[in-house]
Amino acid sequence: MRLPRLIASDLDGTLLRDDGTLSPRTLRALRAAEDAGAEIVIVTARPPRFVDRLAEATGLIGTAVCSNGATVYDIATRTVVSSRHLPLVTARRVVTALAAALPEVGFALETGNQVLYEPAFRMRFAEDGAEIPVPSLADLWLTEAPVTKLLAWSDRLDADTLLATARPGAGSDVQLTHSGGHGLLEISARGVTKAGTLAVLCAGRGIEAAEVIAFGDMPNDLTVLDWAGTGYAMANAHPAVLAAVPAHTVSNQEDGVAHVIERLLAAAATDACHGADGTAADATADAV
Image (cartoon, rainbow, N blue to C red; front, side):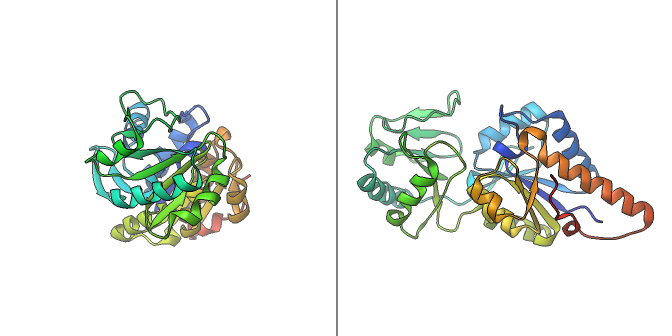
C-alpha cells in the first residue's frame, strides 16, 4: 500500500481539537507522513492570519488553502501565492438582496488580514487587532482592500437555515456555504471552493485526485471530500457530511486524522516488508 502523495485537512473540528489546539499525537502523525514523502496541505475556511498563529504554536510549514479556497498561502514565507477575490460590487448586490429577505442579518468583509464589520454583525472571532468596526453598513463599501469572503450572521437562525433562506436571493455569481459557525454564512466569488483550488494546486504538482486523501467535518468540506481519491468524515461531522461521505474516522477530540495516518503508515511499512504494492484507495474502509 502506497501512502497518498498529498494529505488535505480542514482545521476546526477536524485537525484541531475543540479548544483549537493541535494534539501532540496529531502533530507526530503529520510529521511522520511528511517524512514518508506525503505533502500536507491545510484546507480551511480560516484566513492566513489564523494559520500564522497555528504555525507559530506548532511549527507547521507547507501550503494552506485558506478562506474556503479564495487564497493559497505559503506558511513558511507567509506569502499569498494566489487569490480569487469577491468583487465589491457583487458583495454589495448580495447584501442588498439578503438584507431585504432577512432584515436582522449583519454583514462583514473578510480581507485575509482583517474583518471589517458593521454594527449589526455582532459575532466576534477573538482576534486582537484584526476585527475593525465601521460606523454603518454603507461604510463597508468604502474599503479598498480586496475581499476574500462576505460574511452574513444571524443570532436567530442556525447556519443551515440561514444558508437555505439566503440561497434564492444570492444569485448564481457567488458561492455560499458554512463551516459550522452559529448563524454564520460564508460567501465567496462564483466557483471558489476548497476542491477547486486544491485541484489546481495538485495539477501544478502533477498529483491526481486518486493520490489525495482529505479530512473534514462541515458542509464547506464536502467539495474536497468528494474530489479527493479518499475523503474521510470525522465522527463529529455535520449530519449532511456523515451521510454523503462513505469513509469515517473517529472524532477530532480522539485525533481522528492521526488515527487514519497511523494506519496508512503501518500498512505501508508492512507492505514494504513483504514487497507488496497498493494505493491509498485501499484504506477507504471506516477507520472507526
